[in-house]
Amino acid sequence: MTIDLGSTEAGSVAQGLTAQPGKVAALELRNVNASYGTTEVLRDVSLTVPAGSATVLIGANGAGKSTTLRVASGLMKATSGDVLLHGEPVNDMGAHKRAVRGLCHVPEGRGVYRSLTVKDNLIMQAPKGTVDAGIEMATETFPILGKRLMQKAGTLSGGEQQMLALSAAYVRNPSLVLVDEPSLGLAPIIVDVVFDFLQKLRSTGISLLLVDQFAIRALGIADNAYVLRRGRIAYSGDAATLLQGDMFEQYIGEGSD
Ligand SMILES: Nc1ncnc2c1ncn2[C@@H]1O[C@H](COP(=O)(O)OP(=O)(O)O)[C@@H](O)[C@H]1O
Ligand SMILES: [Mg+2]
Image (tube, rainbow, N blue to C red; front, side):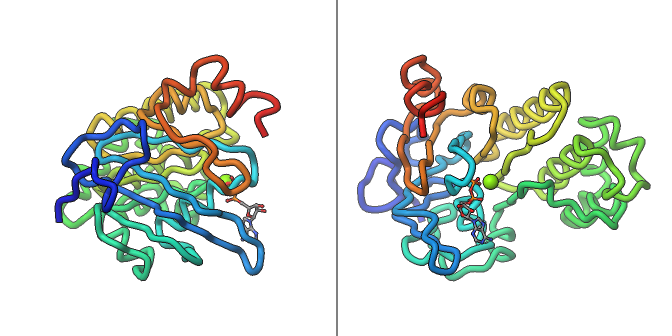
């Protein structure tokens, strides 16, 4: 199914977002509400990740960023609203099936199999016939992983675990990657490595939805941005616009919440 991104009926993009006309969005959330028990966390969240773009989701702690990614990947069900993956409604589809359709969610806290070796973590993710290439890619991109191949993932440093989580995501050959706080708790030099890799991901045409505390860095590699404030979308538009002083101050800087 091909959906015109400009249409207001289906596959639409929020106004002002950079999109590739004629291409169906990689991900779309439409008027999504989500709750933990009786606590409403997401309220009427609409968000689009145009195919081949990088979109960043920014917000204070507890704003609902991780929940948004969980609803998108199928780890959590929306109480109402729609999730579309490459134009296909996936509300009733579990996380595994969404993964088969190209979605990869790298959760906060890395999401590696701690009791498996680095190598086995990569082998688990690589589609048949691509294992060697996947390991080669991971170890070329992150040479330190090459030295740690037979080490259990749980014994890696935080930065190494993040490199493994991102490599494992990449070897799955996804079309859409959701990354939650990849730079959390990492030394500045490792943060650089992580952002370089995210840029590499997007340069291969993979669509990216990124949540990161380093708003300026994240906006710097993104086309589009959303700001989530207490479960509602407070801003949607160009990432570059949000980097402008007054906009940044209003939505991200001190006193923005
Ligand atoms: N498993 C959970 N059970 C109950 N409440 C939760 C759970 N996870 C998150 N919350 C609450 O939902 C809100 C949004 O959380 P989250 O999506 O993790 O925010 P963010 O990622 O923006 O910090 C917060 O108020 C948080 O306390
Ligand atoms: Mg979070």
